[in-house]
Amino acid sequence: MTFHPVGPASDFPDPSSTLVEVDDAPVVLIHAAGHFYALDDVCTHDGGPLSDGPLDPEEKTIACPRHGAKFDLKSGAALTMPATKATAAHEVKVEDGQVLVRLVG
Amino acid sequence: MTATLTSQGYDQAAFDALLASLDEPAWMTDRRRDAFEAFANAPWPSSKDEEWMRTDIRLFKLDQFAKPDDAAAAPCDPGLLTHGVDLGGHVQSVDGNLVSEDLSAELAAKGVLFGGMQRMLAEHGDKLRPSIERDIVCPKYDRFAMLNAAFWTCGSVLYVPKGVSVEQPLHMLSVLGAEKSADLSRTLVVLEEGAEATLLAETASASTDAAGLHCGAIELIVGPNAKLRYVNLQNWNNKVWHFAHQKAVVGKQGQLQWTIGALGAKLAKVNQHVALEGSDAEAQVNGAMFTQGRQHLTYNTHQHHEASYCRSDLLYKTALQDKSRTVWRGMIKVDKPAQRTDAYQRNDNLMLSEHCRADSIPGLEIEADDVRCTHGSTSGRVDESQIFYAMTRGYTRQEAVRMIVSGFFQQIFDRITIQSVRDALGEAIAARVQDLSSL
Ligand code: FES
Image 1 (cartoon, chains in turn brown, blue):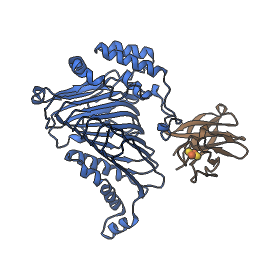
Image 2 (tube, rainbow over the protein chains, first blue to last red):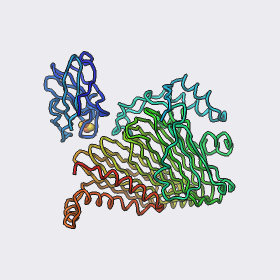
Image 3 (tube, each protein chain N blue to C red):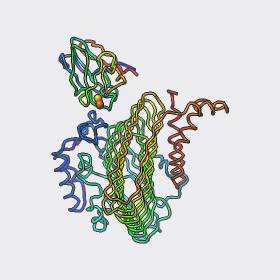
Image 4 (cartoon, rainbow over the protein chains, first blue to last red):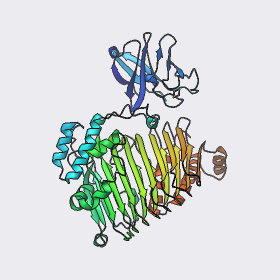
């Protein structure tokens, strides 16, 4: 899998979470506390859109807007019920001011 | 394929241009205007709507898709369902443009009408108008229904007069060829009292990587004592967005056998609705789905019992691999007058990978008090002991899995009475199972 450009870093303020399309997949790109993260924008409980949920830059978590499950920004791990499975965490890098995402898995 | 895309969009100017290019009865134009007005003011469904909660269309951008002005080359393959079948007629479209149609002289002499929707409207508008105005598929059900009702450009009509039996199957093929092309088609089938017919409909993509859009509507009217066998094989490539509203109404003592094969599409959202509106009517619904990659297929089925002594029997079987996902929501609705209803719905899911997901949501809504309504759903992995057994008999692991998958679908195949359909579905599924990599 290759890295796909998703836009200039300046388009994603800190903190923010944005739905982007990477290789046909919905991915939530998160800019929090100076770091970029990319997760599958699909809650593993029942498919809720994580990009619409509250982001906690200090705790490094994003919560599903539907039933509140929290996910770790870095690993995608499900931290609270009702989700029990991790959502996929993808690789992100910034090159020449462009954010690039590579799908993992 | 050399079709040119016109990026006309779906605004007022595009709509006016479409109307100017059509030559159709004024009542149809009025219907389009009505639908367009609703379309222009309606929002897209969102994940906040119960029906769309599990179907994510945030990445869908309608303006990326348009119908090419000219029909691309005709498809070279006549269609999977035609193999070994002696057809009574066919209709083919490519990228929303009709490319060929025919009907045997014998059937035409019996008063059977079969062909492209535009020609049928021009030549037999008065005959078809009452059926169209029944709004079997509600043109304002959601924004996709409105889009289709306002902007449809092609499709097919089958009309079988009272008492006429069409022995040879009829065939419809819709192909998406050009990159980013849109197919907004409608199908109308009318079987008058005591008529009989078999209609094989299938969709295909000319290439594996051209993105496309299909937004369709299918209306089936099965009259009293009439008998329709309708097969619908959805075989788009995995880059196509597929939205469809499909509904059948069955009259007194009418019979419908409706088989769906759902193999393609990047994302599909289909509402399949059967209404038994006359007493003693019967519907059998068969669904076979096979998904792979990141495909997402949602099928909402609805068995609506409006009259007494009707029977409906629905079986959907799904096999999933890779990271694909399916959602099946089934509803049996029994109205108060529909006493002595016998209704059944079942969905079985075979999970072929760690990361696939199948949501199965059966439902019952019963207002009558003397009925039999049952439903069931299973989801499971391939049984390791079955694989082990087959391997001890000399099969490789992959052969064993393939055998188990075809065994899983056998129950559906046994219900399909048309040999070519059984073969085509079996072949198409087997071809995909060969790709199994995660096992
Ligand atoms: S769908 Fe995300 S917590 Fe339920």
